[in-house]
Amino acid sequence: MSKENILITGGAGFIGSELIRQLIKDQSKHVVNLDKLTYAGNLENLKSVEDKSNYTFAKGDICNNELLIELFEKYEITKVIHLAAESHVDRSISDPLLFVKTNLLGTASLLNAAKNYWDGNYENKLFYHISTDEVYGSLKMGKELFTESTSYDPRSPYSASKAGSDHLVRAFYHTYNFPVVISNCSNNYGPYQFPEKLIPLCINNIIKRKPLPIYGEGENIRDWLFVVDHAKAILTVLNKGQLGETYNIGGLNEWSNLDLVRVICKIMDEKLKRPVGDAEKSITFVKDRAGHDLRYAIDASKIKNELGWSPKYQFEEGISLTIDWYLNNQTWLSNVSSGDYQSYYKKQYG
Ligand code: NAD
Ligand code: TYD
Image (cartoon, rainbow, N blue to C red; front, side, top):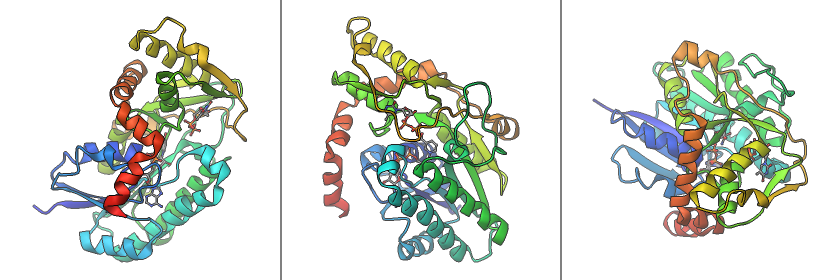
């Protein structure tokens, strides 16, 4: 039986690498991972799959049209799962054009390459776009949740560039009958997340006894999902999602930033055998993020009712596994913090 060739973009990042680790177990699939290896891409995340016969890595940019055509033709790609993006809100505030280029122009290039290669023959083809709940804007405190019909209201250069990419994907569906599906997920946490995002940043800083910066008063709320559950949701949508549909994915797990960091402090004091209350002393309130969205929270009932997915990990288990992973992988942490991993792979891939 010939394998199904799936192009995954951004597979060397946090979520993409978890997705590849799960997907590669299916011998009927051949995964081609296209990644530019920006600061967020790290092939160490994929050590466990790099020698598998159904895995191929290609270093490159999703904005490179010639490379895209070459990859579609060489590997006879029938499905795309598109994760490559600039993903950090704070970086989007300091460099918005990079986010427009990668997230908007990059998605347009990828859509166009797939459309040209598939050339109207859309049977068994799929373009699956991975997006974020941040496109819906910011919720007030309370019980309201983002549903798939919530109007888009992005408020950071990151979320605006992701919203634009979602619109392009839907425009291809409506204009060309191009086969798409989109999912919008809440904040992920788990192993291999770059320590610029809140959870790994705090874990890293607690290990190193550095300050734990909380923006504003720490009252902002996020809905946290374990990355293993997100990857399982992506595989569910890949296999069962309906063309043209959007699925919201979330953890039903809202935390204010301050409460979340306090929980991490408590667990880490226990795991590191430090005195009770030790880590919390390092919490430091700093200047708020510009335009800081107050609250995100997802209604994930559509994917549960229609496709049968719901998160398997309770937060207590997921966060404990995550902290253990960082404690056991401090070389990974110091390599990504120092930038060493990039010089190593530069030698291999240029
Ligand atoms: P990440 O920043 O960890 O990884 C992004 C990957 O994309 C990296 O490997 C990077 O090298 C690659 N990349 C960046 N620009 C590229 C380009 N021009 N060409 C090719 N590759 C490029 O991101 P992540 O947290 O794994 O997020 C993956 C996707 O999921 C993104 O689209 C993001 O918007 C979305 N998402 C993330 C979260 C979250 O909490 N992390 C939540 C919802 C949705
Ligand atoms: P982050 O992990 O950057 O994800 P996002 O901005 O996509 O939600 O931030 C999560 C929350 O934590 C967000 O409300 C901003 C806040 N935050 C801090 O308070 N301090 C920090 O150092 C960082 C990185 C984030």
